[in-house]
Length: 126
Image (cartoon, rainbow, N blue to C red):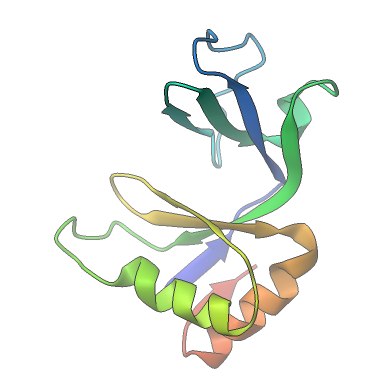
């Protein structure tokens, strides 16, 4: 598979489950946002630079996007990629979209992630 490293860094933010989408929530490319609302939390993945300093957030993630579009019936994509990264001891935050998959890794683990993916036979484009 071919993966592309997206520009910028990203944050995983945690808000209360009943929170409204904040005004700083941005939908700007190359990777705008991911939202998941549960009873106890509203989780957002957005660019680091839009998140206020006082927000509850884990910052400094980089995004690796699988070249798509992928067929929605395709199986094993995340399994294959995550196995290579787990073998290298790289924690991930996996995300899926309609057309592709995105893997978030800490900025300081990006080089290790790219190396592990290449070793497993994948292409990683900076």
